[in-house]
Amino acid sequence: MKKLCIIGAFLLTSQAMTAQIDRSQMPHSGNTPTINLGAPTTYKLPNGLTLMVVENHKLPQISVSLSMDASPSDERNKPGVALLTSSLLGKGTKNMDKDTFNEEVEFLGGSVSVSTRSARASSLSRYFPRIMELFADAALNPVFSQEELEKERAKAIEGLKAGENSTQAVADRVNSALVYTTNHPYGKYETEASLKNVTLNDVINFYKENFSPANAYMIIIGDIKAEEAKQLVEKYFLNWLPATALKTSLYKPKDVQYTQINFIDMPNAVQSELNVFNLQNLKMADKDYFPTLIMNYILGGGFGSYINLNLREKNAFTYGARSSIHTDKWTDATFSVSTKVRNEVTGAAIEEIIKEIKRIQTEDVSAEKLAEAKAQYLGSFIMSTENPATIARFALNIEVQKLPKDFYTNYIKNIEAVTAADVKRVANKYIKINNLRFVVVGKKADVAPQLEKMKFNGKAFPVFYFDKFANKTK
Image (cartoon, rainbow, N blue to C red; front, side, top):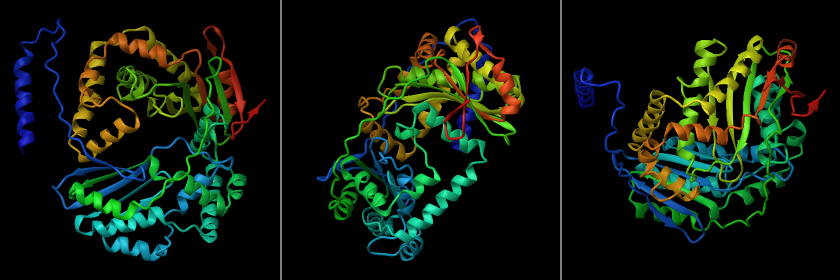
């Protein structure tokens, strides 16, 4: 009720002030609000494990999460070993079979899950010591059996076969393979042959190499004292020994030399999966990070963005279209646009996407659009700070992404400082209009004739054809 009263008062005040506003003048910004973020209690264990504890005694519940800060997995030319290893975790431990384990977790009203790069558990606070013990057992003492491996292998192969008729599944596979190539971990994909090639020893070794405390962060949030949490972690995780660090060098992918269309034929497709990519090297610590957030929101990050309003509202080509710009501390990330359009308008949709990219690169964004984008980010940020988990997430990001200690303290100020000139500048820097890769998965008979007639910068738009595994065809 209190919130409703505040909102009502705000609306009445706003209506009263409307008549006094001079709309010919830009409104003066008020003082930037200060967000006082708490900090988790942080410990560094002798084995390298970093523990962060956020006390929150409002409810009698506790959650714990474990994450690995490691470079993209090296599967030793056996794509599928990471998938199978992850699916085998949670199939029992050296101390309990999986049914007994799951029954006890359920009896306690808790949850425990483990994968190759993360693990999490939660329960009521009075059961947390036992859940913590089970959590450690699942994470540190997994049992990998040939019987379970064969079951998970069969499921994975069946999933691959089911996906061969899905334009979405094929697009997901070829997008990464074309952008990063199969020389890079992000570009590798599972096949029936590669899954059959994974042995039990491969799984065991992959787990040992990738599940290590030296690059691990544990976050405990809830109704527990920090020192008590530390004692539990030391009791169950202090004997977790670091693995030998793998020395891997990541292949450096490259953009296409010129803007082009890569087409994959799916004769059963009733619509085209349309994705656009270029590589970029933005990091969260870069000065361009905040301007790029705002730029992307205006271009394709929100419902009222340039691309979505064009493709959905103006032309009715699609139910939705979005752009994204990612960061990755280990390797180059991507700028991308994604949508699904009817076969017969695929070529037109490509032209409209290019038009909107050129628009944000050449025209100053309006004050209204700029304010809308800032409000979106500021609102989400301020709301997120009410969640105790946010404190831990921010602290983890500062540590893992090598951010300035005041990164989140100054978040609002940095968003508000973004100008229209900044938006145009980063649009030109991170969106490479002459090095875009359009990946289209659709029905060739309906779509290819459109693409072959298209022009880009006054010349024929290059179109190259690939099969469903990103192999070039004629």
